[in-house]
Amino acid sequence: MTDFSRAKRKLCAGGCVGGLLVLASLSGQALAEPVQVGLHLDERFSDNIGRSESHPRSDLEHRLSVSVLHQTDPAPCSSFLDGVFGFRHYQRGTYSDQADLNGSWNGACALSDSGLQWTASDSVSQVAVNTTQAFTPNNQTRRNVFSTGPRYLWLISPRDQLATSAQYQRTSYAGQGQSNATHYLGNSTYTHQMSPTLSVGLGAEIDKGKLDTGEDITRRTGNVQMTKTLTSTRFSGSVGYSRLEDNFGGFQSTNSGMTWQLRVDRQLTERRSVYAEYGRELSDSSSPYVIQIAGLTFNLSQTSALQLTHWRAGLNQDLSSGGTINFDISQQNSEYLSTSETEKSSTATLSLAQPIVTNLTLHSDISAQHQTSSLTTLSQNLYGASLALSYQKTRALAFRAGLGRNINSANSIGTSYRENWMLVGVDYAFR
Image (cartoon, helix red, strand yellow):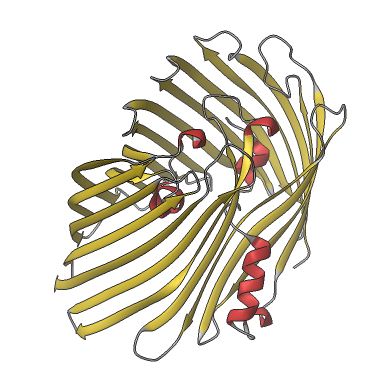
């Protein structure tokens, strides 16, 4: 749902604490660059803090957070850290006090001059346990994704290259009811530059995943890749075949089929651009692609083999007045291969940022989402709208204020709700 306080700071998806520790071990020079630290205070009032249909309860949420932004690239190592650590308190005790950690860290070190490097990344984010229920403190858990391993780039000729990697990944959840997973991945891609604007390639990947439930999932994929760049348009994508083996409780099933990832980006004018992408893959909900690249959502309680089909399209417009307009529509279909259950989600969002006077900007967001689930026969429509102002007092000090409304209209008793909220906030940047 639309919430100015969350939309304003999209800093989150990674492990700040773990990232700092690995960062320090990777390079002694990495911490030599200045670290940008910010302090944020939010006061958010809601007339239905629990997003309940029958028992709405108002409360005032106090949130204090610290953000860290740090980027370095001293040879032979580089790193990027972007994270927020926050603490929440509810005035009327609707929920207990809680801390949250969101952010991402990526690092790499060259092991030789021949193209061999070691990479590592860590991400932490708060995610919904059940996407068919309201996103409240009682329906969220902390997800941590850690990945590390070597990568090698072999420049065969000025037009040919071979990229190979081996990665270990661990996906873990803080709460109960979710299945942690370990993945071992191997990937190799050969690319040939046919012309300055066209490249083609062949790729192969194997992903062996083991869930804490005892389920083993092995995915093998081969594909053909292509990238074509024109004056104002860029086409990229891959088409291939994937085979997924799922072994659980002594029962084994095999699924296979065509997979693809296609995307086109086009610059219509100097200030207007559009994009569209369409993909399908066989995977599981703890896989690296699903979490880190596609950003797909599903019920974590049903972690298992999946067939995912999704598309997205959008428009980005820079206004002559200095403002921006962004429009995005998307759809995701998830089929759980072991049970044939399906989930579908369609979303549309529109956002506007418009300067009014010097240092004062108006923000407006509208969103709509339709969700269905064959397991529960649940169908719900979620709507959100917000209007806010941000004022940059100095380079270090900024103020925010906004209000909005969230609505869920569902066909199930006890699921629908309406929420009105107001927010004021202050941000201070130390560096």
